[in-house]
Image (tube, rainbow, N blue to C red; front, side):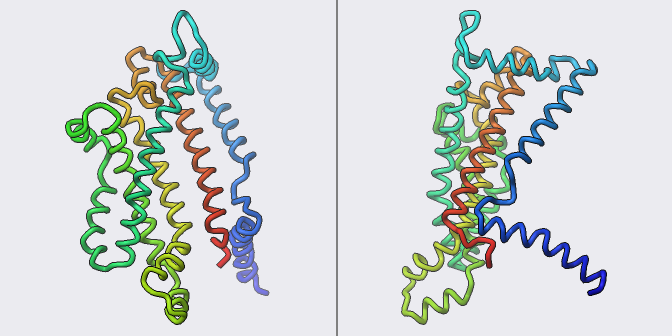
Length: 286
């Protein structure tokens, strides 16, 4: 075997074997200790940068100061409950509830819309550009309009998160339909499957993994949008907490909010990866 062939074989073994192992064991390509190592490295760099004294704690708080903010957020101190009159878990649950509600409505609307676009050329021509238009809109661009229409309560936040989530789910579902193997469709038709049977027994199982992938992407968009959604009447809420911290120049609270948002997003993504392995265990094997 030539050296060039050996190099190609080495590259093939690298990523192909990891994918096969992930599909067979269900462990995925990531390991928990990799994330822990990255977190420790980030913490070390953060501590080293703040230890130099080149940055004011008003701009870049030390890890210790953020830890004290965390302790304050889960206790009663100086006559105050947590931060902004709510415990940290109350802020977390308020944001999580909003994100999950927006995602739920995104799934309810996005999956059927994606199926329609993927199965119908006419729907693709008419609805496809509309989905692309919504996908390209920045949340802060249309949030003031949603407030004018639905007020500053929960409705405008739900609509904002829904619009952030529905486009990725729709696009992923439509792409999954386009990727359905022709052999499966032909086999189903030969066996006498009708249009509804074709969708229910061939298309839906085939796009299950793509739908979950779309939900994963939409979840990320929803979490990046939650700060914008909670800038107005967003307390309790992690985004509202981070936004309110600027009034008191509390960068430590802002950093704490960002860390909690990030960790929650990682946890949700891990759950969705687990769901993906259960609904589409064949993914990566063929």
